Image 1 (cartoon, rainbow, N blue to C red):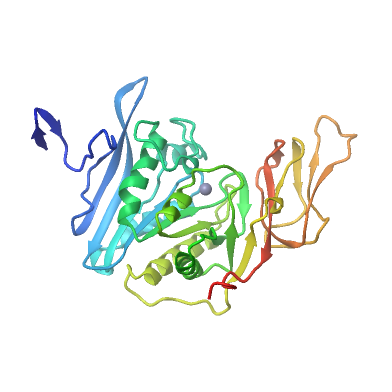
Image 2: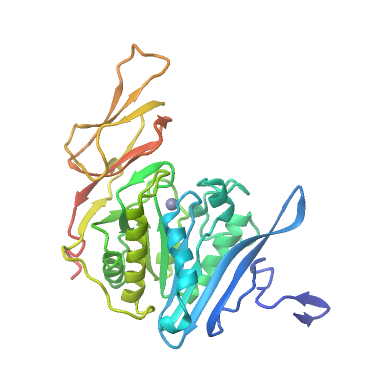
Length: 353
Ligand SMILES: [Zn+2]
């Protein structure tokens, strides 16, 4: 602790006017450090409570800085498992540069198996660039935007479709306008070794973590590692193998970069029509599995009505041919839920080489 004008401050605490977050580790130091970010909040039995978000730093000599995160949405677990494994397995001697690990950005949501934070009802992935005087989610988003992203060369944010969507396991990315940044992101996304890689657009609001990191010029690597509540062992393996390979590719983890025998299949869903929404509330019947090909006019799914067995099921139609890359996970749907995403083959290098 240091004392300044009678005010006691803990080490590594930013000026509260900048961020109220207190870090128990010093990211400028070499070697291995394990601690947490403390985010002050109150609840009825805890007036001086702190939400503790585990963070580790492994640093060894010169090299890139990679920020590795999962649990942005609580109910998305393969990335959290992969980073927890790396937390215990990696030592500074395995690295050249710095690896910052946050296995779970939203522990209350992960414990509750929810997408949104139970503390403030926020979707963490709509909170960026954040607000130092806001709710716990907004305070952490602000800390990432102003403290951690500026330190990083590479930002990794691991997702799945959560409980609401089943995704074909993919690494995915935005088509950032800067060609040098886009090329670096394409090769890094490729290094995740998924069979399919996906170019996506945002159809559900603004304030996303990747967009903030991209706007700061970072190489941003993200995934949709399946979804629904079941995580097959093969998806855990894919996530863990891909993540290690990305770290080797980025030059922070020592090792030999693995390459796929077959080139990755790139697909994109950049048109709003590629995202299909339930026209009515009801009971959803999937008519295709993710990864299957659909034709224009196909019924991707059908909505049934428990209270009106006499009503014909309402089809959700494909607007174009393509691959079903994501589908509805829960069978109960509300009007306006995204129930399908249809992606189309693309050469992402066309025009930028
Ligand atoms: Zn997510």
